[in-house]
Length: 277
Image 1 (cartoon, rainbow, N blue to C red):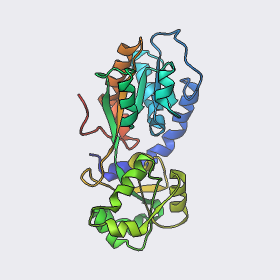
Image 2: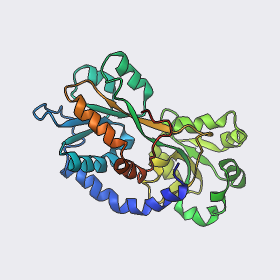
Image 3: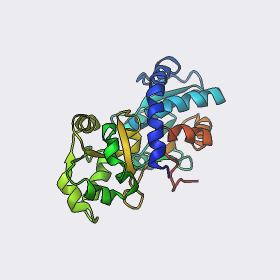
Image 4: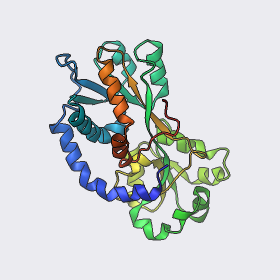
């Protein structure tokens, strides 16, 4: 498990690295294009990925293409990926935190059931604006419940419960010693941008995924909620049924390598403790 200080140390580096990475998305790989890829090059791999993975995938794709010589096209998954794949959209790998989607694809015989591997996870984090750093030094060394008690005059913002982070935050308002206090102070925002906007205009906390917080240079991770308090979000790499399954399996294996894990860690992800073999 990564320590909150490791995340904080990564934030400054993120501000310098994000621009060239986004440039690489546009100039090095044909990413984010919704045009259906051709089958001209059998080695080319097309990846459908959750939005939360797009930034690290730019760097991961560049590293893997350099290492293997395999061109990669990364497309943000949207709408109903299962329906798109079933209707013949040519993709070779799905990277998703949605177990229901993966099960649907398995039931329709659209995936390699032995080629699904957990490769990353991210935890719910208590986040605050960096301008509050001096007043929060003491709470960095105490538990989440103790922090709520000590800073009992500040609101706690969360994302919509339909999102992985919002769902996990909402689950904390029942069955915990701090649930009543949290429920009284929690304010649900319509999206992540609204949560960040609140923190930028007034003091307060947010419960969001560490991978969302670490890319914001004006935000700091006060603490990571332990797995016993909040289940991490786990991302699976799924090999889709195609003529390129062998090449796809090679990429999923790369995602579990030390090189890939180091890249993922700089974006607030870690190797899942319950990774499948």
